[in-house]
Amino acid sequence: MATSIDSNVLNSVNGTVGQAGKAAANRESDDLNDRFMTLLVTQLKNQDPMNPMENAEMTSQLAQINTVSGIEKLNTTLSSITDQIDQGRALEAAGLVGSGVMVPGNKVLTSQVDGKVTTTPIGIELDQPADNVRVTITNGSGQVVDQYDAGSAKAGVSNISWDGELSLGEAAPDGAYNVSLQATRDEKPIGSQALNYAQVGAVTPQENGGVLLDLGAVYGQIGLNDVKQIL
Image (cartoon, rainbow, N blue to C red):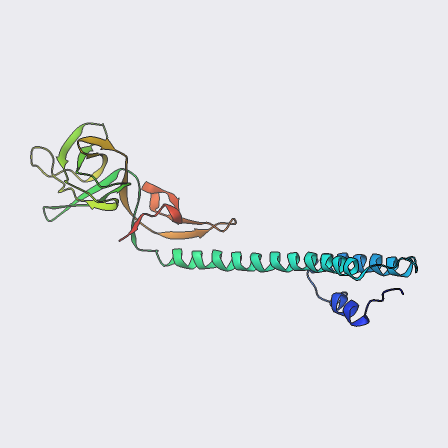
């Protein structure tokens, strides 16, 4: 006896076909469903009555169309989640406008106000603790103007200060200086990354979902993932 397909099953599978106002992706999925069901119904009509389609085979073919529809819905859901994550990252980055951050770099800025020298923070990122960090400050010409030991530093991000004085004790002229850091453990050099201070002036979302932070003319733009510390 030939196996028949319940009309409710067909209506359930094709219930969304032809609805007005669907997006292009949905229309494509519906067209695929329609073609699949047409082929299946034709196969049932033309099958050999003496060798009808087995229930398991029919169920397998129906499962295939459900799988295709499910993948389409999953892709749509994932796309929506990705958009929400991107929006969240943009909002998070917007909250950094006006904030100070530590980012990869080797600059330190100095200025004098009422005879008192102020400097921007210096940072270091370490994979392991250091027994000592040797700090070398050079001017724009590459001349060493100060050198000192900052002491131990923990693994991760640590801040280092410079008093803004040159090696002979006089105040450093206003401007930008370069920083070189040498971290050691058990008197052996270990890997480190110098960090410098910058202030976030603006945020620019990217088409790929990323976010760029504008740090001004000196430091330019960096990605949100490049921020090592928020001050």
